[in-house]
Length: 305
Figure 1 (cartoon, rainbow, N blue to C red):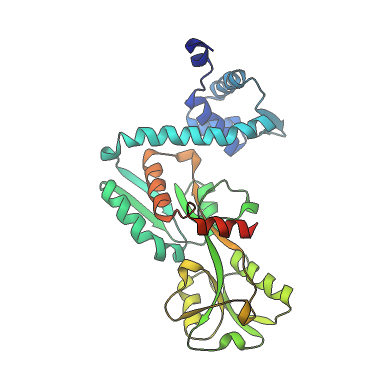
Figure 2: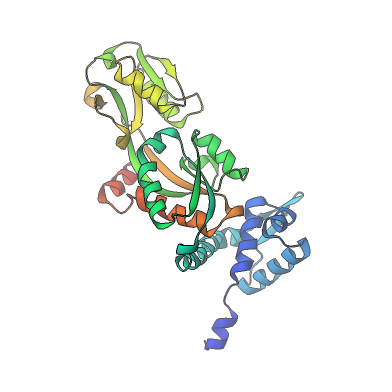
């Protein structure tokens, strides 16, 4: 293929931005609002994109649209291309990045990870302002979807259907006070999150399968409250391995406690309001949390399948 022919087949990044807006909002009209284009301009862009790839990308779905199989195939490439384009431009503008970025993070992740993330980000972007919102992962997901946040660090659950980038995998473990024998009580007292908490559902599901009687003694979204109940010897809980504190004991099969699933931590982004600043913060989060290159993380991921 000649250089001229290859250039003719290059995909326009702005077309991909519009494509992603349609994929996220399932509407040409709403996508137009996001990318600041008229509906006719959006339609023309997508016609040209479909001509470029040689495949139909959208199908009607009631009043909205959905991606065809080829559209789904393009989606991941489009996200990567747009992200890399933003990151490339940001790398030449780092010194000038200013403004405000809104970050959501659960309180337990904030305690463990925010100090390093914010320190790194402050060093590279001293003129930027970070607004932090601490709420449970499900609420943060809704805030990102509602465009109240630019990005969030969340516990990833594939079944919820939120596109996210997994950046860390850890073992989820049973914990009790190292100075008490509350784990021997029957029924077993538990300190866990609210009923919709995935860790709570995993823990109670494993105990039910084992036929081990239990009762929920403390329920809270606040990790400090749950940790206090554990350290006081009042209850058993479940935590990611990195969250185990001094004074806590990890319980395993020899103690009568079954293995738990892994905990996947992910970055969730507001695609409709992507900026160089939010991309830069996402880079620092990824660099601070990433453990996916280690053999241990790979083994954990394999064991979870």
